[in-house]
Image 1 (cartoon, rainbow, N blue to C red):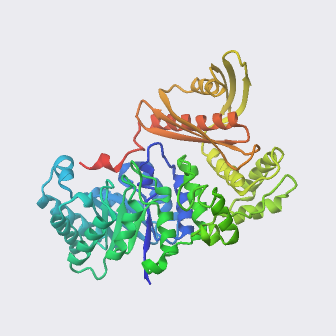
Image 2: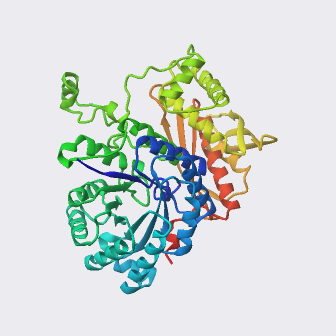
Image 3: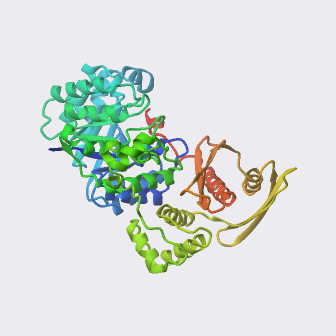
Length: 519
């Protein structure tokens, strides 16, 4: 079997999802989980875009072992220099250079002709090859490029020292038949490719990103680039958890193997969902809540007799456990600590003490505390450490015939006590009006949603909000998890408002798309 490399760009392209803003701690946490999942490469960010991105790439390079750590660059020497500085601490590092090759991009965005593009490719790939053993080149919008010129561009990159050629369906325009033929043409038509890897980077605008990526394997591609949960620009990227699982379930058809540790799939997906604030759809393939549920009586009967009648994926294969023993209020600290290890956490004794107190408080309110509850406790605790505002108290006055009133108490920088009141047509509106009064901001609430962490009336509530900073036009998410839905609502909105405050201090500079740098 030939080996298919899995390259993750959740931390770069995935962060271009509206409302998604990873901080450095979150990026490192996700990168560590991606390494545990077994990806071969992690695209950690776009260092030239902002100081925050450069800092995150540097932190990942110094912390995460195993995968190749990659940084994105334009075809510019100062971009490549910044990437080199950010990646100095990585044991295995690479640079990813992109330049558009489609007529529409060259004419309207770059304002360059074909000769200028070829010259720019050759010059900057050769420059990067002086500093990096692994140079990746992406002809942006490859699927809408003239095939003859695309071939010339790929050849120029290979001749200049590129080791990875990443064929992009940047706007999700292609289909599996067309994309396979394109890849086949490029692989066969490119000279001196003995040590060159052909890769894919497909977007999901027409819902074919995973199919397009898999179709390229039969044409010679040995590397697939995508994101966890398929997040990314517009409709997102190829979902790597679907790609990896498909290659395993249909390995006899594809005749390939990967380095992915599939049992870590669900944990990886859940972590990204938590930090992005984007819930996993119930009908999502591989990791969705309904992926292994059966409503039809005929299906239920078949599954009871033999699960393979209607289940092609064993849930345990991708880390979806159905028989994990939950903890309860009588569980001790030792059992709790062992559960943390089982869930993949490595906490200090002090962090365990804090998490255990929160666990006991929750256990007093509900009969059984599931794995998902414990993940929510730990991840929420980690997130809370990074904010200077802490919600200490929430009081509500409810009147079914009139406006509701809320009073909140917030501690700033562990010292200043801030008390605010607000009213509204509903309890959540009253809470949010009170929080608004703390911050001098112009924001708009774009989305508010509630999901249960587990099932049953005693489930914790997970509230997600999305707000727009009207000053910079950036969007920010907030997540709150609590046994009480109103408390969770307050946590979520406060987190989003804190992010807006930081955005205003930075003038919006930390959240920039690579498309802002195509001049």
